[in-house]
Length: 198
Image (cartoon, rainbow, N blue to C red):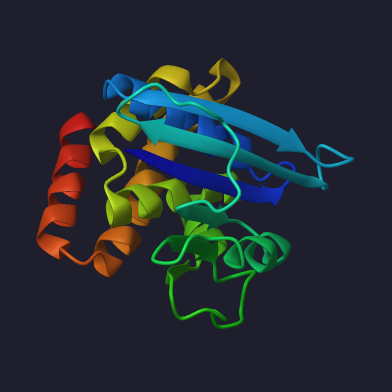
């Protein structure tokens, strides 16, 4: 079984890093994984997205036309990828920037005020980790505990002073994802896992 995720946003929003953290967390979980980045004409301010595929067997192709899940960090990404999400899939978007309602009714949508949340935690750059937390808690693609370990192990040295803030953003995002999950009791166990690694 394979699950595909696209993270998309403006360059500098951290879409690629969020995808990398998901990939590292999947590897820690003993899963097969691919991570493929793509950049627009300008790295900062242009478009940036990456595709992550997680599976329990070797992955045949890293290319995805219709992802299972999408994390859209701005309005252009939400517009493009809402149309491409597989029926029955999920899109997580930042309701601070995407103020419209979903167009499709055959997919789930988590609209979370990620920019507001990150600003409250002290740094707007935490948006990507908050949205990753929501995705993982809602889908159980990997455990929140493994995501927290991946952040702790792979946060660049120059951002180590933001480690506790990143873990806090992960927890806040997971609460949004848990609140939208079909089985809130199971999602609540993910939050307990996060508390254990803090």
